Length: 145
Length: 145
Image (cartoon, rainbow over all chains, first blue to last red; front, side, top):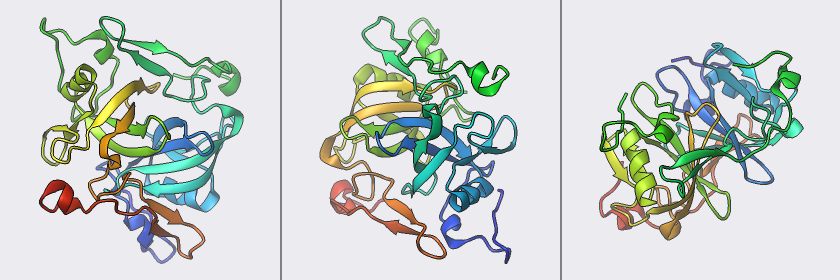
């Protein structure tokens, strides 16, 4: 497990309350502070959690790139963090945020949860309900995988 | 990975859109359909997802008990599911629910995210903000670990 420590080499007490998984990660939900809309879920390691607390901007750990992911570092769509909450088991974080630019998803949509399961269809099917607000290529310059 | 199949032995197309982890699980967020409050996060396997879709009540997979966990089976605090959403990567589910009994957390609180990180404190510390609405022993009969 990846342990974050302060200058004395000791993990802060508040950080020790978190339960990281075998990969040293904890999931974090980003929820719009005003509307309550759930925008995305990403992962943090201890370093990302500490930097988020220190800077007030959401920092995740990219599992695909295997490095810290300062949300908005390419797109400018940073997340200002107003509140950090922890669940009863200590293994999920909840961030109340303001999404700069109004786009949290790499597809150019407001939120990652843009698919809704249509149960009226037989069999059920996923329907895309949210519009693309901005072409991902204009956000990132190059196509995102 | 645990695969759920229909009577023909084929995984339904809508279920095949989900990405389960190495343990065959996917996290599911339960959000109050009216207030937008995030109540809890738990895990589902393919069977739990299918039973949730079929019954309209949230069914999770208990990692500690290693079996299906029909939410409310002991407490009566079932979750009526109104909407199921999937994120862009297909690896997180979002349920909009009505929490019967108004208590989602096994501690007897409305929600599992009852701890708030107090950043005004130096060093930061977790503060419990939500009241216990019902003694867990009266909910479950025996103390929950």
